[in-house]
Amino acid sequence: MRSNLGAVAAVVALLAAGCSDGQGSDDDPDGATGGAAECQPMVRFEGTIYLNAAYSSEQVTQVGMADNANCDDNGEDARGAFFPPNPRQVEGSAFEGIPTSDVIGVRQGDLLGVFVSENVTDHRAEHLVDKVATPSVDRQEIGTLDVGHCWIEPVTFDGARWALPRTEQFGLGDRLPAHWEGTGEMERLSENRARYVDDGGAVLVFYPADAPAVRFMRGLCA
Image (cartoon, rainbow, N blue to C red; front, side, top):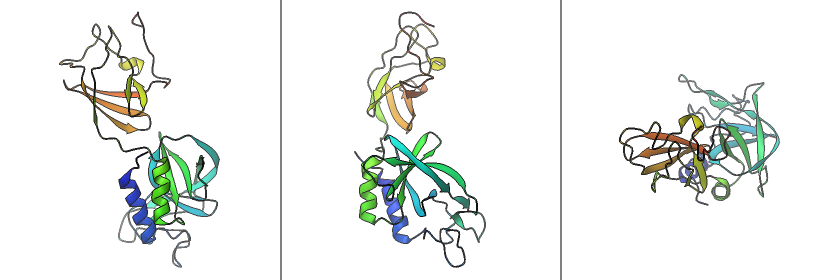
């Protein structure tokens, strides 16, 4: 699996620079990121600090609650990411075959963040991210879409099947966009969304084919 190289480089740079020292400085015992104004997403699980390195579509198993860092990025004395006395709790998850002492998963909206322990070496951080990160997929040409009278068939892209929600469906006999070509490019926006740009200009957002909002229509338009 190809890694998100930008994310790998970011986490390696952060780990090497010691932007999060896990215990904070003598002046900031709550784990602030050394005075940096930028807030790298950060959590604390079982006493260990983890930094967000990438995103993943792998299956995970919940293992417990983690502390979520706050962000202070305003003003000259901004603390960056830090842990308040009573931090917000988020669910921490384990990736199969990887110890939670090295990596945990944390949901961020509809994305699963890959959080790498600050205690791992640069080389191991790259290796771990490479194992679980969702590949960075550039916009790709999609063959001619299979369009029925009032629906678009599911599309295979980036190793998954995608479809339009029922409310967004259309076809040759119903709500066909102006200048529709039926060929275009698709790019993955997140774990659960992909955007299709038709050569005629229409823009559609697809969801996983098994998502609750998706409904396939056969024979009769409904």
